[in-house]
Image (cartoon, rainbow, N blue to C red):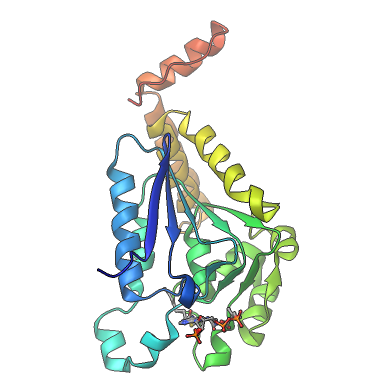
Length: 258
Ligand code: CO8
């Protein structure tokens, strides 16, 4: 039997998914994408899991689309099968927060996969780039759309048109990643953050994630309206009464996730 292209583990309420094609630098083969989406869905539906971490190895997060596989694809087949669109759709569908932990290369589809995560932590050796131009193609899984939102037009255009990479410090300075840590510490720090998120009311976390993600889709007026409606919905939660009551009673809240 061939080795799984991902490794899955749990740390209390945190589900951890590691990309596992070290010989191909975790390139996104069709099999890897299928297994990744299956694992994400399983964690998302698992009541014992409250947050998800997506990472690679200490050397590489992901070197992008599998160049060997992509080389064999014709335009018609790519177009008719919506090649790689399922990755964006699959990540979009996850309700629980996904923290991406990037050590080493996050290139092409790897950089795009990182940007599909809700929060990004990077090891000091992280390298982000959209080198597709050097292969005679363009980013195909959100690079031209998400990078501009993350780091602004000029920096995004520079990366996409030159294929040049940025390092962890540049990624943090430009807002692409939330934190940089030493390579051997970054996963542990992300797990701690995920545990912290997991300690809050699950429906409230899901609503906060949805509202923030909608900011990328909606204009300000519609976004504020959407936020108000979700905020008003919180008033119906048992956890809302519990959180406010616990604060006033000067005790820790006991969330029931309802
Ligand atoms: N696909 C398949 N195999 C790869 C890939 C890849 N993207 N990247 C590296 N490999 C393989 C190499 O072929 C090599 O295999 P082998 O040992 O059999 O020759 C092995 O991994 C190790 O690679 P290197 O010897 O090149 O390792 P180096 O440390 O010298 O270099 C680099 C590391 C800089 C990461 C280099 O491998 C590299 O530049 N890789 C290609 C990066 C790239 O161009 N990525 C963009 C791909 S196109 C893309 O992502 C389009 C996005 C479309 C949407 C995708 C959504 C899922």
